[in-house]
Image (cartoon, helix red, strand yellow):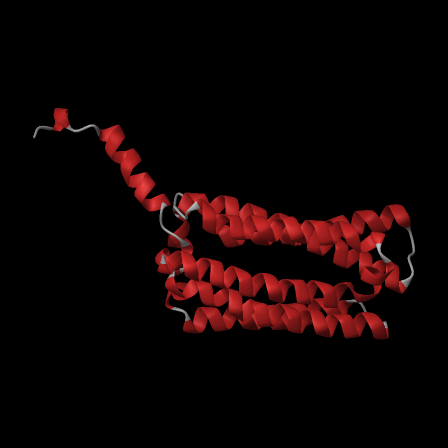
Length: 213
């Protein structure tokens, strides 16, 4: 067979379809463990933040709590997961840097809070704390949506990407609902932690099922 007889476009399309059929579990075996890891870390941090909120402790305690708990969790992943050790700068050559995208979107919550405070002025402790949580949860949801969309460049199938889209939907919905409900304004951190636990466990089994199937 000569080069002229090979349909390069058709071959490329076929290869792309094969790659797209792969799930997260198949491409990054240890990645599914992240869901269980953060399924524990996020509710733990949320419980600590709920205590800070109820006791009206300094707001900066939240930042320390989430940085230590989630940073420690991610550090464990990098230390023990084989795939985690391979996520270096070279991983993203010619592709979206997933962690950079996620971080940029998430950190956008900080200037957004500053803008809101400038327009609203002084707020009571509970209102300020709930406002911060609401904005952060919405921006986290947006970050999950961006992350899921970018996974297409890594040839992760649509069904697994929908795990992230589902996270985006419920987080944005919860963030919008917090200022509408007195109960959520009081117990927002606990509700977020509980919802994330359910979401993380469900995501773990969905992705694992996709890898076994």
